[in-house]
Image (cartoon, rainbow, N blue to C red; front, side, top):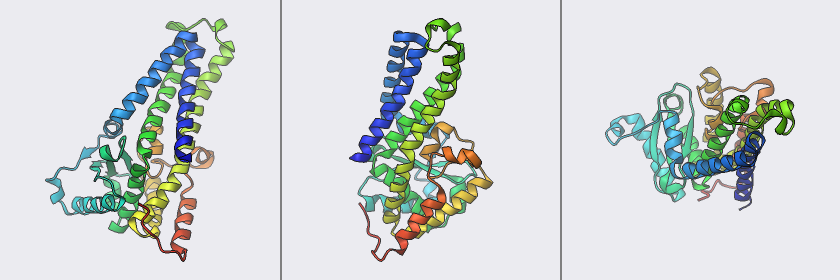
Length: 294
């Protein structure tokens, strides 16, 4: 319940950033327009979250005929077993043609969920490691994190887009510079700070959920070491082959799809992989047996 309240608060903050932009550039009418826009995004994301995310990465649903391929059947069988263990319907299974190893889950609830994996992760992982990855993603589905993630991605993307267009607002119906709070300095700060604010809120939504999904995924697959090994492989694989992903959707993946070294690592949407692995190893070393959480 606390985690759900935190997510609602953070999503409200994202909406607030969008309203603040509308207020700055268009006064009360601009704020009203931003409110209608954010409402449309939330409603659209609720009903079409799975289609939005999957279409962005040209994911293809695995057909019954394709399950004749041994590797795809193996992964699908793992997905079926984990979904039954978690007490949810089997999500639709998608593949993204991309050599960078990664995966994400999407959908507004367990009844409308989908799991997508890249061809890169299929080539890289053992069945045990894939069970850890898929267990992590199914935990997001069980906790209904997938809806929050997609709405956050949509709102963050909208804020970034509006901030990029903001410099033209005065030429296309925006209020005169003198009428806008802060004038030219206010405009500059809005263009720079609005996407940063949306990114920080988005990051806050993601990080705590990743630790919870790691724990749940480890329990679903039955061995925390499987997921720990998978995360280590993923980090190396993504460093060698980054994904051409939209930064607004980075938090949806099991690991950030591009390398963020140096100062940029402070703004990662995911916790440090080393810390995630350390927690899983502590979990594996615990004298208490790993019990299925769902």
